[in-house]
Image 1 (cartoon, helix red, strand yellow):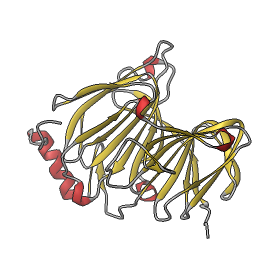
Image 2 (cartoon, rainbow, N blue to C red):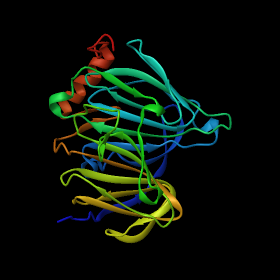
Image 3 (cartoon, helix red, strand yellow):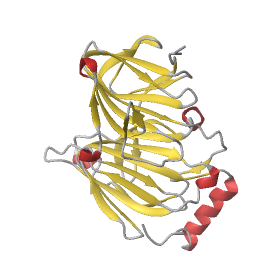
Image 4 (tube, rainbow, N blue to C red):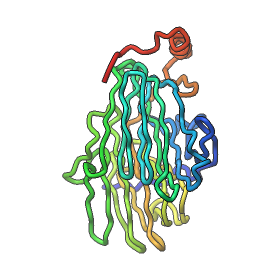
Length: 287
């Protein structure tokens, strides 16, 4: 028998500053990671004013995590110390596995109207894979399958399965699903989830409800974390609703976290920063 997921927590993303002074909104992160396990942080970096984002995210290290960048509008260029470089644009995704260590920079550039819209999600790596070789999965918009369902519901499948369709990002340790869902006004959509996975939604256009969970209306910048179950029911209000629906298998491991590095123990964290200071942080020489 299907068990509908109830809402465990609902909140709104909050303004914060990151990088060299980038204005963004943080949906969650730094203090509530146990609730979203295996996910650590999610930022909404939609902005219309270049002065709010143009300074970007200069050179910085990562270890022990994966960063997932999804661009809606504008461009994000990236470079790292291993001579990897590229640009992700509207509709593109970069799934970067930092693993044992990467030092990189990410620099946003708006479109002709100055708009820079997108999201970055951090996912944790289990202790057994924290020191895996770094890698990138860079996916262009045209490679992301889009399905249309009854009532006009459209789903972009970035990672995981939806029906018989599998997203282009593959072989991720936490078995995630990352969907961009658009639901027309008044239309209901039911989505099956793995019962043991953490599931959350982030609404970024329009508004709607999750009828089996609550009658409360959730709109732009709303984060909804669901309790256990195997289905999420979504009902769009006017003028419709667009959201990210994301899930993954919890790790249930201790987290020792400071800035861009996430390990399991304080000793591992201290060692990572010591290696960064001493110039021995990078363990892999190329892509």
